[in-house]
Image 1 (tube, rainbow, N blue to C red):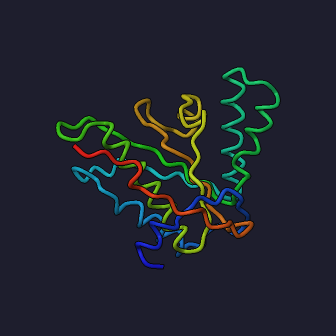
Image 2: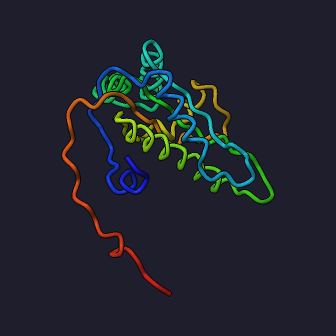
Length: 182
């Protein structure tokens, strides 16, 4: 798959099953992440990978956060199953720092670009991935349980695995309809 084909055909794969990427595939995915624009070479990201027992740990973190927020029993039960939707979940964290030339927002965007690059690399490898956020990405209890600092921001949970079904190709959209010239 060439780069243009990747950019024009990439799509999320929400239905994922085992196996997760193997070590060599995961290395490619992570190496793609750190090639994104990074003003000041700050590397403002951390990738927390959950597989096997780690998925159970992430589920426990989500359950405790849901309970702490006063969620009803249905949502608590849903939270327990969230990490089980894929054989691997990569929590992407913007690890920002104060910098005279690189605003925090730019560092968060770089972490978001890293997430997108990982999703694209997975797609190019024939691996499924879907980028999810939701309330747990903004939950202080989740941050504490993951050992994050108060200024760290989860930018997403990248669910990764083998596509459960072959997704139909989404129709091509015309990017020019979102343009305004000055």
